[in-house]
Length: 357
Figure 1 (tube, rainbow, N blue to C red):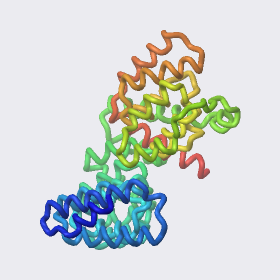
Figure 2: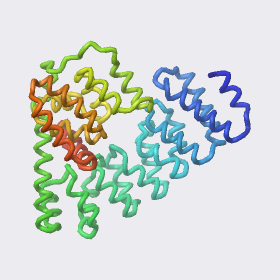
Figure 3: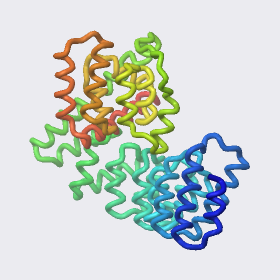
Figure 4: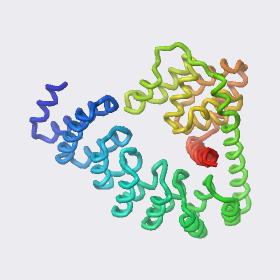
């Protein structure tokens, strides 16, 4: 491998340089969590030099790959995030290597496409959200309203509530937010047709009930050891790393752990991928009701056949009949991925609010 990289480095044609960039980045990603500081410095220097000579599409591919690698050096992440929007958008939306100050600087200085990418991050502090709302045009403001991970200051909430009066898509997004006060929620409902308002009210109540189920006895469920780790050659941390590097898919790992009936480690993997605390994932996994774990799995794009195998493992753990498993599968097939992702975002915000209370 090393000799081939050295040979590629001597080449001047764009195809060979592209191949070198791909191989160096793959080598970095494969063991990013193991390199010493000296090795990281070496990789950073090589990648930054290659980036200078790379074409836009190649830099965009690199940005998309490194955006999901937490070990990506800050200066490399910031360089990509400061580039053209087609390259920067991946870093701006996904990278944990960018600091709060980096994001604030970029939000204050970059154009609308960059702001839109930042607005889609899983979590935005209210200070950053305010800058996006102040500088952003309609697409950015709609994106903020639709992002439950975007914290809103009092000013930000007032602005979005005002805009909701004349912007139907933004108004609909606001009705699904979990951080609305009762007063704001009722004001939004009053702006909707009666039948739509009742539908939103019912859905909001159902989501709130689901949050209560997830919270209920979550700590006790884990402490009681209701799920036991089975002896298995499957290493959950290695599997998680392979998922994040793209070496394998979540569906493949999900199926393997379901077949081995290793629900304990599967709960760990689902928690890590979804960003939920493992105690909440474990709680919904061992409850008879399917709604909580179904929402999580559908939101993570778990396939029907994979979920069916999981239901069999779950049914065996809970000592339930085939009829129960069939009912779970019917419910899962009725749940859309878009709806599940919306509910999961609602749940995350409510859980965060409950933990902070």
